[in-house]
Image (cartoon, rainbow, N blue to C red; front, top):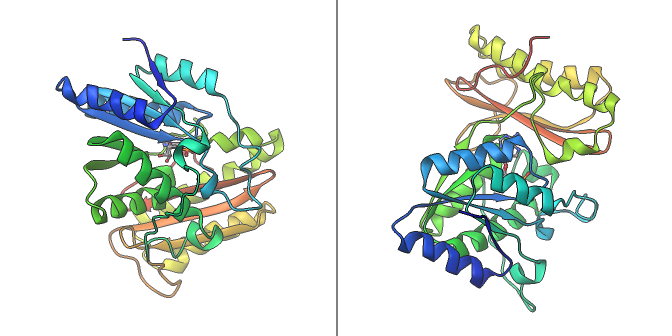
Length: 293
Ligand code: AMP
């Protein structure tokens, strides 16, 4: 089947309806484009869990802050379409901004609590933009299985909460972070890194990997798990937005003086040169990412 490109919400809705009407289950992969092997892995997972995969490609203006990289975010639709086709996607939805935010629009979707910490603290309004656009995409696509990366772990948890709270007919599943062989998490924003920045960025996955090894060796003191990650970033001259340990379901931060239980999210965000990078591990669940230091 050739890839079908939809430009309007009504075209995409009709195409999704056709998939279900033929008795096939729809898999949905929302993205902002500039597709890489991490996105392609989500498409493969969507096809594994469903019958036909639809990829959405939309650089969503409402999830960028006024000083962030909306204008310079890479837009590579032609090569994205080729990657979707090669990955076996059936549909791509690539709308213009006016299609998703019709003239006079006044509606936002906000999830409380889960958005208070981690990236919610350093990017005010970001998750409101994310939940608003994903609610719209789910409203257009209809019943489906949607696949999101655990690289954006907080985003995954926020979208799962929103989907339950709004009674949307969507099963939201997470997929493990896809990494370069040396451990760097794939990201469209890696394109902003100079060769020096790319080398420095390895400290993200390496320091998280060291935390996984400490946890797996029995360390449960929150500070002993978290602080060395912060120190490793600072040691190479980086100033993290945050390095936070929290409950892997409620995303409530865990103080350095506390003990962690069987599972905990350890997540960080840091500007490296021109790119704001994020990475995380769930201690007690994820293997240590990347090559050993
Ligand atoms: P983005 O285009 O960056 O908004 O990401 C679209 C989807 O791809 C989100 O569900 C991300 O979590 C996911 N994603 C991005 N990078 C990776 C990666 N390295 N591994 C797995 N999923 C990813």
